[in-house]
Structure formats: structure tokens, C-alpha cells
Length: 198
Image (tube, rainbow, N blue to C red; front, side, top):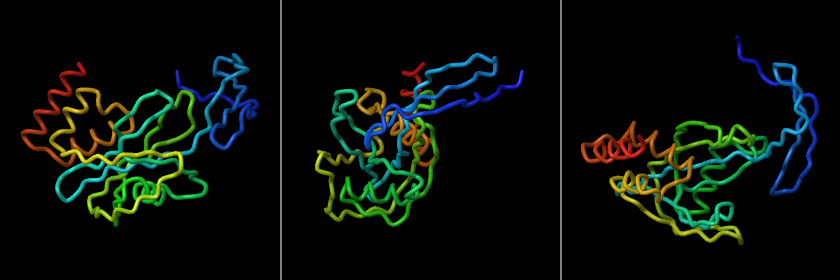
């Protein structure tokens, strides 16, 4: 049987705040059953940057994430409205504001869905290799961000230990490390990571 999309019958916002938008959809499933209350988080897209310094270090940020109540190590990223701003421009802006590093060129790695069950947004992953430190950060008044430089060789261990545990960050790291930085040491570390996941 051919997979079919759901049919949207009606849609309304039940929360429509600048920082939180929740939509209730009424949908008809391919079976004909109607679901009256399917709730979605209408979220802006995310632009995420995996940046590598000339010394072979990946630029991370450490910050408190209230949704999980933890201080997390992740790649610099920020939200943007794709109707207003291009993903690459948003990635460059957010990266420079959060880290104080400047980037001349970004290469698109991938576009992923964040949580396609309930969230409408996508995550746009970029690679930056030509970065220079300017020292000028422009944090929002609610942001407290520590910039952390991690040698590429130490990343697999941080993945394995769970110190790096944010999905978009992990996706970008695995895509780039497996494709671009194959060395005996890194391959061995990544093999340990794969084994730990089995």
C-alpha cells in the first residue's frame, strides 16, 4: 500500500507568543479517522555552525538550557525565520555573535528535521574552516555563553561520555568527522564510539 499524507481539515493557533507558538490541527488520516487535536510547535529554523580553527580545534559553546535544566556543550547555533533571512546569513550572524570569531565562508553540510513528530522547524548545518578570532561578541541580554575550543581528536571521547549530547551537534560532528578527518587515531576513537552505541 502506498504511504499517504494526512489531510489538513482545520488549523488554529492556541498559543501565539513571540517565543512560543502552538498550533492545533484537525486532520484526517488515510484510514478516514479524524484526529481533532493534533498539537504542533511552530518553531523557527535553526542555523548551526561547526567551525574548525587553524590549530585543528572545534569551536563549541557551553550554556545553560532551561528546557532540560542542564549546562550543555554544543555547537554555536541560533534561531531564524526562513521567510525573513537566509540560513547561511543567520548561521554567520549567530556564530560571530556567540563566539567572537569571524568566518569568511560557510559550506552547507545538511538540512535536517529537528523533531518531525511535533515540531515544524529544520536545522541547517554549516562547516566553517576559515575562522579568525576578533574577540567581539554580541550576546543577547539573556545569554551567558562560554566559548570552548576542543581538539578534533578529543571529540569522539566527549561523544562517548555523553558530554556532547545535543542531537544537531552530534549530527554535524559525525557527518564532518567521518567524511573529512579520517586518521588512524580518529578512526579508532570513532570505532569505540560506534561500539558503545551497539
